[in-house]
Image 1: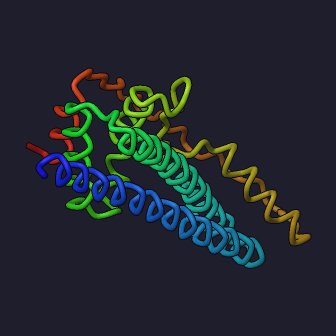
Image 2 (image 1 turned 180 degrees about the vertical axis):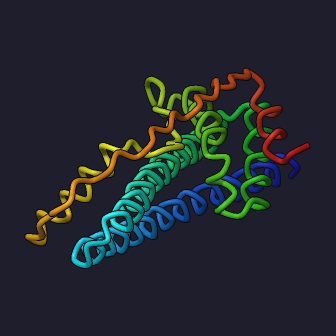
Length: 203
């Protein structure tokens, strides 16, 4: 009886993880729409000769594209984890320690608004990556990237791309934006998944 309840609880938690992965996919779709909106603002700014505004909107568009890719990657990782855990749960191959990790992860994702998940995306990615390895859901490590700044040449390229798409002419040269070097935070690799999950709660 106890074993059956424990199994049902695990399956419910896995279902919640799969649901959260779908929410992340929706967040990616939202970012894609916002990116298109910012690109359209680039076009309008160029038409008005507002090159500084075009650059700002260009930065926004690139940032939204990066956010979209981050959400897609995170959602894909979580989906891989939950699918593999589901298969293992059906064959009663989930260890007690893994059950604890799943339980803690489920609680944290429930209590964390989707916006705050993005703020801690690098930590979640690290946890999902480790879970993927432990459940043999993937082979190799996932790329962990959280862009903190937008290179000036990338912004210029996007503005020029939008101008070309709409047959607009840039009459003034773009001033070089001050280069901002993002500080690379050292990746925190802690073998204890439970402690990393606890860190996300701010305790």
